[in-house]
Figure 1 (cartoon, rainbow, N blue to C red):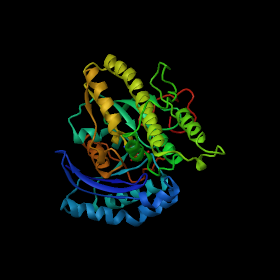
Figure 2: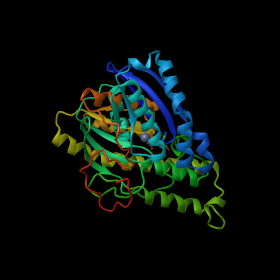
Figure 3: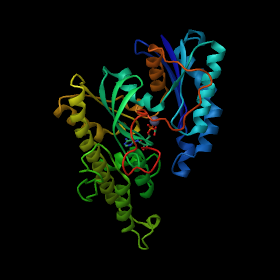
Figure 4: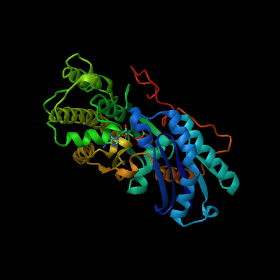
Length: 359
Ligand code: KG4
Ligand code: ZN
């Protein structure tokens, strides 16, 4: 069984072809990073236009890379939400057109399911497993029971962790995306110099909050500006590293604290479960990965994370999620409408205190 996957929900135009032997036959990815950099974040209109411009050649390249003919694939999957709708539409339309032309089934993949299942392609992860899904737009703790079956144990009630990395980086004038830059600065910083708040740390549930942490960092930066305006702050290099290290440690402490609670719940309800998985862009962070690996070991679980290039957005995870869906017989008709909002656990109640759409 061979599936083509297409990803275009944020700022990566990507495609990949995988088979049911867990082989990645071909892939191609184009990042729009440089197009969005001057704006300090992803500009939806620019993203949509860029996806449109490049999607055909990305798919063509993927077939070339795989050295297979379009007729040889069995189905076409596309990330069909959640995400920036202009971009999502581009990938979905391309997939539907191919589906029609090749007379092969179309599979609408939830972008978050792509992140959630990636570790099953790259490692030996069995259902049910506990998942920390942490990216630029989402931060959730879920039990993955099977393809399409999720139970959300916790979520951020405001910013996603990746969003907090990006905002802190912007405030420090370090650029976009913030995660990799902050991680690099933090590596030479003193994480104990600036003690930052840990919102919801002792709330007793598995929910998370990062907006207060971001505000605390803002206050520190303001103290370096003669007029209190952060753009005017003059911060010595070592102090920037210390702020980054303190911030990274605090985010990690919060994620580990809530995962520790979630592990207890997971073990109670699914004693047969043996895996803790982290995925999504923030899962690229080595400091966080090491802490999660230690937590898993202490609690008797196996720790898995996809290789870093499959943590951030990519076509491989969409192709794989599409393949798992296809194996179950889940396909979609061509009138499927892309979904800008598409929670993995549709039954999860709105988290108390949550204002934004992320929860
Ligand atoms: O999964 P992803 O590529 O896109 C979304 O679906 O959101 O995640 C992107 C996010 C950005 O916020 C970026 O700053 C963060 O992942 N990120 C990191 C690291 N690499 C990427 N955060 C922390 N440490 C990193 N090394
Ligand atoms: Zn993503």
